[in-house]
Image (cartoon, rainbow, N blue to C red; front, side, top):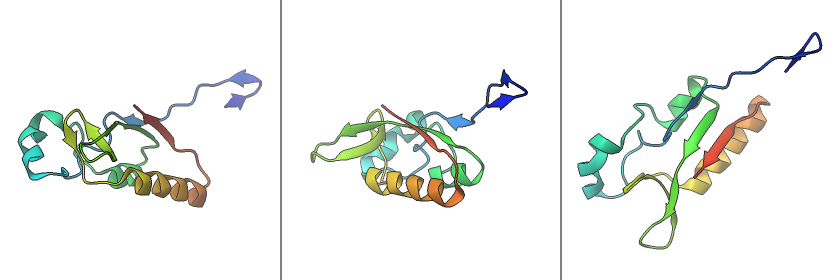
Amino acid sequence: MISAGVLVPKTIIGTHDSITAHPPRKWWMKLGKAIAVTQDKTIYQQYADGIRCFDLRIRLSDDDTWVLCHGLYEVNLDIYDLLYWFRTKAEQNRENVYIRIV
């Protein structure tokens, strides 16, 4: 952002391992939830609260599909649906949403 000819940094609030509040894909993943979860709000709740920078972790699962995860903890949330949702929200609200995918 430029103010009176001076570059002013803009702060963007974000979350780490943003998807960990979502339920796990498989029942046995609940066992590791205590050490895997870093958020207590879903990604949709975080967005509603003003978060605009999200940290998403993905990996190829045993069934050869891309899944959102934190280590071995996979969440029951489709990555393609989530990215489409982000795009739709950003366009509707005419704002930027930053996504880091690792």
